[in-house]
Image (cartoon, rainbow, N blue to C red):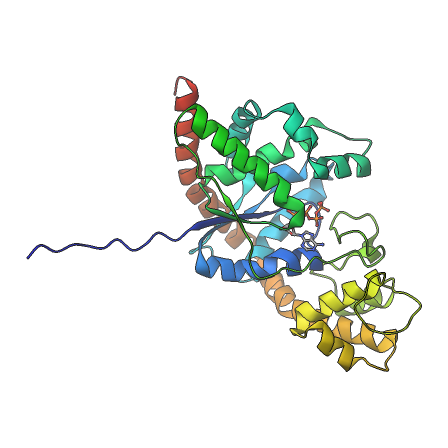
Length: 338
Ligand code: AQP
């Protein structure tokens, strides 16, 4: 009797990146990193330290070098397994810059001009509105398309960029022949959008010049307590989720992410209590949430040899996939291959 061998279904590939533009914040952690371990279990995951993206804003070389290593150690500390997922540093895979150049020539100036992140960042970095900042979404498209990623986790702020990556992929596929997988957004378990502790209308950002506005994932417990104690609230004094109470809403969101309680349960817990008690509880929950990450991070960050091995192995695995895609692209465009 003839036997049919059933191939196991290929897991979908998911790609996610984080910029080493500072020390990652509680926002990066609750909004993205915390979910990456689950994604790595469910999908074929590739996770990158997006150092090329980070130089769209001026970086101090010595600090930048440290931040890159630090973010790689953090990927290990959140539980990603380098044997299972591909963990790599973007600049170690030259195909990212090469494909980005090619894709620049398949992207219209008008499309890029509509990107809201460019408009925002060119206001906040008015002294350095560089071409890299403008072309950032094209590099992001190259990141995604090189790996033929099926899925990309996106927060609200990155939706427009994923749309552009899809448009570029479709355009190229139509002009030549199917080359790129057209990526879909991955809308996972609602990741929190954490806001600045000093200006809760603005998102918490690792490059914010005011360190009181963010909690870094490596802040010591006493620093976390101090920063939450000085978080902006309002004069009402009641812990409830409502329009116009951005500071309290933000702290409730953080508390909810760390404890799993919903807003009604939080309101019940703090009924009749003041903001002092509430802030102390939020601080304690954040300290406990970040404690295991910080402890594991300390172990990895000091093991330079291991980090070098992880980066080298990751770059090799990533390059194998990325180079295959780049070769296809170069051939279709008409370059003479070496
Ligand atoms: N405040 C936030 N709340 C929830 N999620 C957030 N992310 C960033 N800030 C928040 C998510 O973290 C992932 C990695 O982000 P990134 O480093 O690639 O870039 P970013 O969004 O520009 O992060 P920052 O901290 O604001 O960096 P800078 O200050 O350099 O611009 C992404 O999934 C992002 O959505």
